Length: 193
Image (cartoon, rainbow, N blue to C red):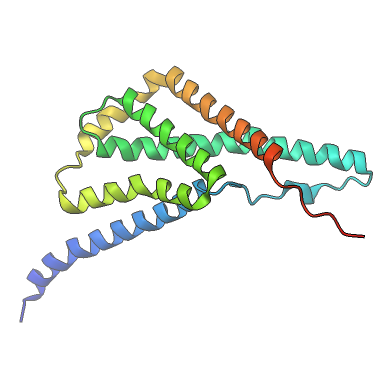
């Protein structure tokens, strides 16, 4: 029989690893499924449209649509880029923060392009990096260097112009993809008479 103190010394790190890895996996699961959808917004602002006249109703629908993509999408894109930048900073011991930001913006952009092509592909791309980090952590716990990661992340405030350029690129890309999707989407079936 193992004494309680020795058992506790074994079970405590195990419990901490299970809790940490499970929380990470749940977050990543929610994160990649969200980012990989073509239509990322479930928010239906149009249902709050109380306009009675058809032209006014159409106007408000357009306003709500623009709000979703001019207000909400930039906030979400910024969050995605931030999460991926942190994950890449943990993964990369050699890259500069400038390179990490470039890769992060590229991954977010690639996920969004793939979402418009095929959501399953987009899901695979979105979960690849976070799960690779978990695999690296599981194989070599010393690979992750929190002090080096923190040092890199502390350099970001000095690179706000670069972040703004990547952010603007993501915004313009999403707008372009949305317009392209609207132009090439199949028209909804009209009622047959």
